[in-house]
Image (cartoon, rainbow, N blue to C red):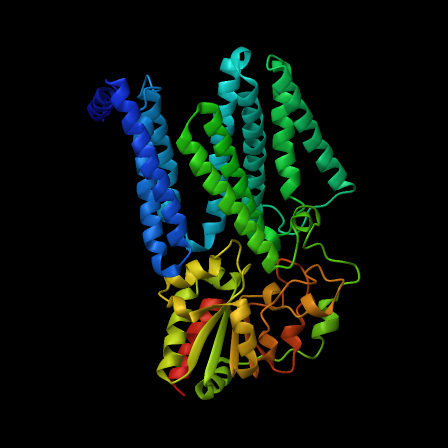
Length: 480
């Protein structure tokens, strides 16, 4: 291993031998890498080219790493390879062994790692160069460290909520918005002082603590139902932090990559908010998911109205159905039922039924969560229909099968202005002739409210684990 590191170090040192040639090589490498990143975003926009987008993005990152390693600014590769080994030891198990159901948590951790790396690099640069930092570089440094530290703790809080280490409901307290904004204001004020007087090192630890604290307080009042939007927003913050680091280190590749990451994350956040009919301020400061005292209670909605059914009864309905729409939710992910769902859809199609999948923008716990799971199960992309496209077809649907979805099909979003999900667009499954809801129990979703759909006249509840329920439906359907 030591000889391998020595050989690689020797090759890189040789590549650095000519300063002019090195600068040309690094510049060309960065340009090609930037083009790869742009093409990756372009191709990821369409499911048919998404795989190519991932490949070209990975190739671009490889080029960026190679260009950085041969840069004349690196004088010793020992710590570089130590860090590479430590990163690989953490990253490889995360990629290989992390189940698809935990992708949102892993994404939150990735944001946390990336942002703390940027913040620590910025901190080291400030502490080593504070007397000689220019005004522009100091502004970039303050922005980088503020975004980096708050994104780190914010992402860790998001991970805790997604992993259910922390309560998924909003954690609120009196005057929380005033306190949060005061902490942010104090951090910004100290940052301005550091820009004007870079030598005021005694203020730096206070600045860091305030930024870390604001990241915690920013996320804990946000409910689990908002996690898809929060994940996208944290992605934006991490990208902007990396872009600021590029200005500090005079690294054009970091500027480009960070700007792409930051802008794409922000655009995705806007799309998610639009899909939920909500604003950024409502997401960040509205404590979405907090249940109003006037909100409907489960006992009032469900008493004597919920109808359960067996697999055989539901299979009889499916046998005669000409059109079936499957609505996946986080419950499908938890049960790892996506492959069984694919098998059920294939069986229904073999019997002559038209089968489509209704995808709500915030179903699951991160943007595209259901799309990723169904793609893993080889469900054709053209079968996945977005909310605006599928909603008008529910009145012509014989059976709508809801698997583990809750808030995204809850009619209270339209009928109860006191509901925490009031105004959020939903999948209108209740308009189907028959609705089959597969859930373990009548427990509420992340918003913490009951669902009148479960007690509707045309709804049948199939209380079971998602995967087990679908497999029982398959077996019963084969016997019809």
